[in-house]
Length: 209
Image (cartoon, rainbow, N blue to C red; front, side, top):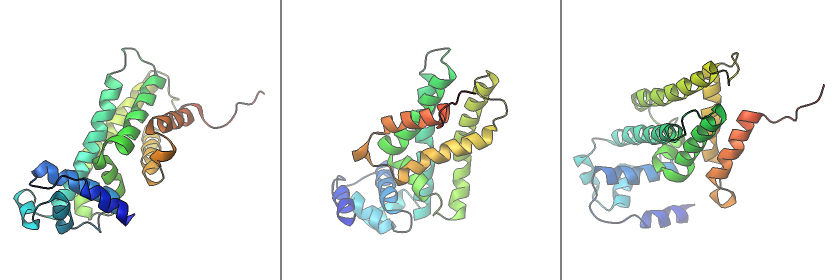
């Protein structure tokens, strides 16, 4: 694992980077190594700058973490919103949910170090940093709640389903894939189809009565 990480870090272009470059490097490191193992000195070294140069952009490690967490949610939120908006007018509930699930998983597993870092380190960071991220996190949760509520109002989702619990279960299951997903054994695209099939159709064969 150490050799893999070192190899990836060596691929990062050396030289001066701006605020965005520091965040890109930090997100990759947090995704791979977690919160506690990543220091400002390590971020600076991976970015090819002196440790003191980071202070031109950020006042502390936790300020970097807060920016990475916000960006991680914003990336997956925008990906999901655009995927649903791109569907033809009048698209059915199944198409909408499949698009939302696919967008979330692709942002998490294929597209963004930020989204993956958010899921991986959120529980590791200080409470003050988590609190600062709550507004962005709540906005994404509200996007899902509104989506599921519209589907329920249209009659496609059972009336007795609790929207908040469904959203917690759905996002929790999608985020958990980060811990075991292996891109060498399958794609995020295929995984999204499997998850959508399970959520939409269940796991048990229907028995004739």
